[in-house]
Image 1 (cartoon, rainbow over the protein chains, first blue to last red):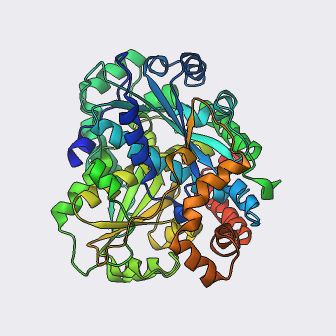
Image 2: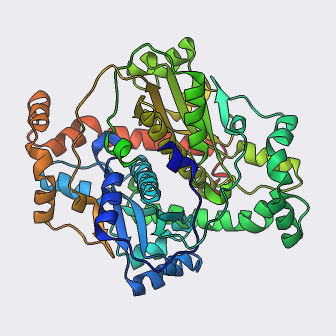
Amino acid sequence: MIKTIHNHRSIRKYKSDLIDDTVLKGILEAGTRASTTGNMQVYSMVVTTDHNLKQKLWEPHFKQDMVKQAPVIITFCADFNRFNKWCEQRNAVPGYDNFLSFFTAAIDALLVAQNVALAAEDQGLGICYLGTTTYMANTIIDILNLPEFVIPITTLVLGYPDETPPLTDRLPLEAVLHNEVYKNYLPEDIDRLYAEKEALQETLDLLEENKKETLAQVFTDNRYTRKDNEFFSEKLLDVIRKQGFMKDDL
Amino acid sequence: MIKTIHNHRSIRKYKSDLIDDTVLKGILEAGTRASTTGNMQVYSMVVTTDHNLKQKLWEPHFKQDMVKQAPVIITFCADFNRFNKWCEQRNAVPGYDNFLSFFTAAIDALLVAQNVALAAEDQGLGICYLGTTTYMANTIIDILNLPEFVIPITTLVLGYPDETPPLTDRLPLEAVLHNEVYKNYLPEDIDRLYAEKEALQETLDLLEENKKETLAQVFTDNRYTRKDNEFFSEKLLDVIRKQGFMKDDL
């Protein structure tokens, strides 16, 4: 287990080999063993293998080729649709058209996704998370026919790796760990915690490539800009409203 | 790995045995190997073992005794504070005071939490997620001194199990699985998918205990009511604003 966890790297190139149905089923079953709030299981997994559908999903996922190349795409959704239908059929009045319920369902979907990711890697498969899912949720909803009370939260591409990238760097444990309570960072803490990352050859290459003075500027000016973040924030909040999760707010 | 995943049950009674520092460190390191957006690692883990602090956390976690009993409490936070400080010290202007950035950081925190949960279980520890974290985020922020741009997303209690509960039931895989695109549920699908759960002795006991006609009513009327959901929705949105993640919305 620990070995699989420590061996994780995101895979962006896949062989054309398909994933055996039994293997895939085992991985998805592993997903369902994750904890969910009140054991309500308010999530769904949409497994897409069809060439044309993958082609369609490639667009909202910023045209990353692995979406077309990987044999299996799994979209993990916050899903109160099934639960609501069950309530209504059982003479119960659901009260899940609010932000807390959306967030609860998103938590379910993410814990399930990480179980699926680790189970897949344990089987020798490669995976990559697609953060574009929340940016482009609206388009993905249309492609996958997601009804009211269903919102895509994250996506995994799965397949047999056609590359063996090195492990990616991590900040030292102390950067993300607080003992007892949160201890805020002093300027010298920040310098110390980021020193190793900033000295990597990969970082120096990025600075040259992007003509930037610091790695932080690569993030703020190129990768995750204020303009994009604000644009996609508005879109995501619209999706949450449109899918029925902020009815008390209107 | 698969075995650890399939063996998961939430543990609510703990022995007083402490967790060895090396074991705990290994588990936390496993957390840091999870994928995060752009490898930004915009999360924090606050590890609380102090008796008085656990006593304080017990209140917002709805006075569940395991919070006082378990030797270790880990609060997983969406955290752009460290990243923002780094940007500011590196002549970069962060644009992460918006909802998308909050949600991105929450995704990071949850994938890390599930790695930690599985690594802990792999070491023979028991765990339980506390969904109360998002309900009572405001109080937890005060207890743990969380600064602006830090929000608690979920909590794990960890310790050596003092009970061996049976595995909890799950809906059949087909209930949460959609092939290619989402296929909405017909009334007969709902009946079939919930039949096994509704027939469990545990369910029949719950109906009697709660004097309810259907299991769905136990959820809507007692466990997760509209009134509570709407109240905690408003509180959670307030926390997101207060911690600085909706500045473009004001």
